[in-house]
Amino acid sequence: MISLDRRTRVIAAVAAVFAAGGLVESARARFASPPVALAAETALPPGRTAAGGAFGFAPVVKQAAAAVVNISSTKIVRAEGGSAQLSPLFERFFGEEPEIPHSYREHSLGSGVIIRPDGLVLTNSHVVEGATEVRVSGADKREYRARVLGSDPKTDIAVLKIDAQALPALPLGDSSHVQVGDVVLAVGNPFGIGQTVTMGIVSATGRGGLGIEDYEDFIQTDAAINPGNSGGALVNSQGELVGINTAILSRSEDGGNQGIGFAVPSNLAGQVMKQLLEHGRVIRGWLGVLPQPVTVSEARFFKLSQPEGALLGEVTPGSPAVQAGLQRGDILLRVNGQPISDINAFRLQIAMTPPGTQLRFEVRRDGQDREIAVRLAELPSPPERPVKAVAPSSPFEGLSVEELNPQLARRLRVPAGAGGVVIADIDSASPAAEAGLQSGDVIQEVDRKPVQNLDDFRRTAASAGKEPVLLLISRLGHTFYLAVDAA
Image (cartoon, rainbow, N blue to C red; front, side):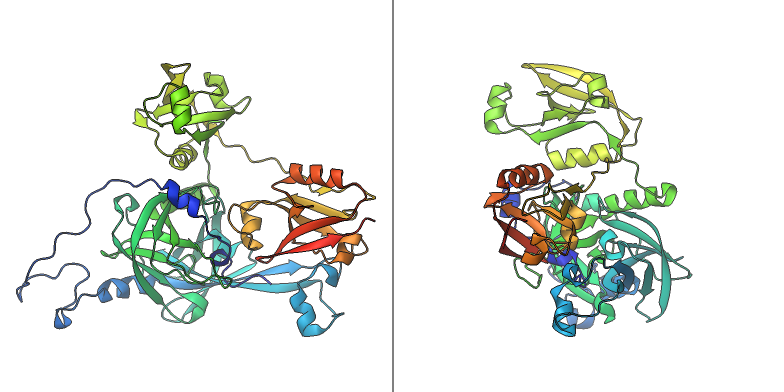
C-alpha cells in the first residue's frame, strides 16, 4: 500500500547538496527594526497582537488557515498475476493464499490552498496523481467534489476546481522578495483533522539538484512540514502565500520532520498554474544542451578568472543550440546580459521561457568570447522507452524492467538520487518470483555492481549468464539482498 503522504517519506539525506549551496536572491529587507516601546495608539506591525503586548501570528494564521483545505483522492489500482505481485501486507491480513480482487481502491490525503474565491485550488501533483475521484473539505467542514484542471509532475503542481463561490482565498504573493532569515508559517490540513500551523525561518532560496523534481527552485525552511501537509501553504509574516509545501528531508523510517522542508515558490507555481489553465499543460522552452557547473580546475583550463557559467557537456543534434552554432565544450557566461551563476536556475530559466523567444548568449570558446543568438523551440516530449524483457535461460527469465524516473521513485519510496530499474512485470512461475521478487521492486545492484539505469542492468544481466545472482532490492523504502537461481 502507498503511504498517506508519499512525498514526505521518500527523500533521503543529501548533505552534499547543502555543501554546494543554493541560489540566494537579493531583495528588500522584510522586517524593520522593532521599536523600543509602543505607545497605546501606535499601529501594531504585522505579527503583533494587542493582548499583553505579546508577539504572535494569530491574525495571519486566521486568514491563512481559512483558505487551506484537506484533499482526499481515490484511484483504482489493478492487480495482475495473482498474489505473487502484491504487497506482503495482504498476506498479513488474509493468510498465505489470500483471495485478492483484481482491483482495489487506494486513498491518498494531502492539503491544498484556495487561491480564488470561486474555488480554484493549488496543491501538489503527487497528491492527486492518477486519481479517479478528488474531494476537498475546508475549515468549515463542508466537502466538495473537485475537478483536476491540470497537473505538472515536473514541478509537482496541480490545479483543482470546486464548484463554490465566496470562499476564503489566499492570493499568490511575490516569492522573489523572500530572503534567508524571513519568518514563515507552514499551514496544512492533514488527514482531515483540521488546520495545523508550524513556524520557522527561510533557510535558503533557489534550492535545486535534490532529485525531487525535474525542475527545482525550492524555498528551504525549518518550519515543520509533516505528513499530510503536502500541498499546503507557506505564508510570510504579512499573510502572503509565498510557497506550496512539497517535501521534507528525512532520515527516519517514518518520514518524520527533521527541520529541512521544501516549498515550490509562489512565482513558479503561478507560472505553472497560468499555463495549465490556458493550455492544459506546461509549454516549456528548449535549448538542447546538457549544462554543468564549472570547477576551479576547469576554469583554469578554459582561461576563466573564476569558476562561472555553464559548461556544455552535451549538445543535442538538431536542437536550437546546434542550429545557432553552439558546440560541446562551450561555456555559456551570460544570457541576455545576466551572469549564469547557478545551473539549476539556468535550466529553470530556459524551461520557463516561451518557445520562439530569442536569447543572446555570451560564450567562451577556445579562450575567446563571442555572442551567439539562439531562438528557443518547444521542449519535445520524451520518447516512450519500452519495457525491456530479459533474455531467457538466466536468473532474470520471466522478468521485465523499466527505467526508474522521479515519479516512480516517489511512489516506491526510493531515496533521492538513488538509481535502479523497476520490475514492471514478473512471471509467477519464474525463478525470480520463486525467490521472492515482486512487481514494483527496484533492483539497485546485481552481484554487488551498482545499477543506475537500463543500460547498466542489461550489461550486468548479460554478464551473469546462467549463474545465480545476488540482487540488492529496494522495496517500499527498505533495502535487502536476494539471491536468484538460474532458470
